[in-house]
Length: 167
Image (spheres, rainbow, N blue to C red):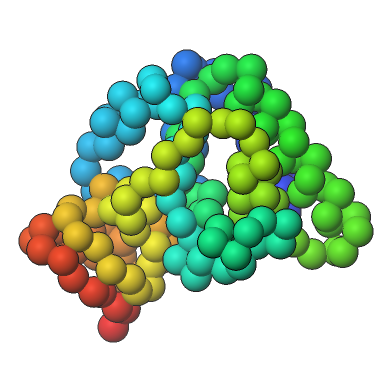
């Protein structure tokens, strides 16, 4: 390990199964997301937008940053090549600029790939401290002083569209 953000970028050896969902260590599973594995039988990759949806260099203005805290992968050669390209792009940008997010290079490489990917609903990556969801939260991502489990129970009291914020 490098003990940097680079450690969160998977390599192909980290995908031991036909379909793998990688989760950041600050995620909490509120409900089953088994349907994501069904989706990955027909898609190479599944990802959510990053909450800030930052602009990403070397992509059109209509493309915004994806969040790499919850990503599903199908294990196949094209995905292995994508992971290698993402790792390489991140390493190169760090060498050139000294700073870059793994999400920026992920989004760049995904945009320029031929992968068949799906952008998931926000409920699969509910990013704290605030946001909007419409349905039950499946995966919560972040930290909260009251505890993430308590936040999950609170958020999932209804399926109605709602805005939430940390108190």
